[in-house]
Image (tube, rainbow, N blue to C red):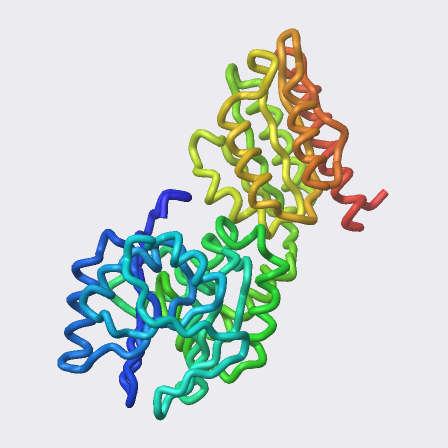
Length: 376
């Protein structure tokens, strides 16, 4: 879980169904292996484990499978063909248990419970699938609808809707965003399923606020945009910071909600969460060794990997002689197929008050013209 700082921690969720046949859905990260095996044993008691459903082979959900097989060597593994191929690669020294490779839509009969499997490839690995229990009206969603959030409480209403939705949004923006087209499939499917609970593999279980999380995913998987702007910059002697502030003031005067970030003060994961739902993005850096400052370069690399869509951009920066930084930023944003909102702003040395006022007015004017707020 080292993609970004986990301000609110993370939980690893695994589920047991006790029926005529017992079934465990997914395992957990190796860091909590002993606790996990102990808890599974306590739940099963004297009963054997009949089935292990593997929805996803990423190590945070699969690393303890080999330990589980030592305790329950007769378990039947339920997985798809892509998961099986990964399994053989991950655990080449482990004696292969009996494996039942299932197809899309196939049903596993446990007795009173019948599990249906839906493949969700590239949300966010090629192997992903989810499991639906019609009798319980539970969607075992693995990473989908999850959050990097740890709590002694299990359910959304116990933790609080605001933090649950915010962490779900941050999780999506930083992990699922590049696979938005694929995520649209499961979001559309979930809206048509009879669901009373979404049992995620990270964070809270959705029970009382299912319409809200489904609405959030509907917005994110359709790349819905709000009238918001994000301004990101780094600065050496304050010139680029002044330009960033002027651009922000122009956005604000045009009635656009704006967030201003010095890249050194806020982690990229928090910034991208806002970028995902914004219409406008401005990025600035002074020229440094004929290039851009390293933290802005890192942010652009992070942005490129997550590939948000539908943004209008401004590139800006200051310089003393070379002045290459603005074009570098512009080229990176053009490669993402963003639309230029204003011509690149390239400032020699320190901007004067007149320079800053012009930047502010130009940004505000252009936005007001585009949104229909401008009045002659």
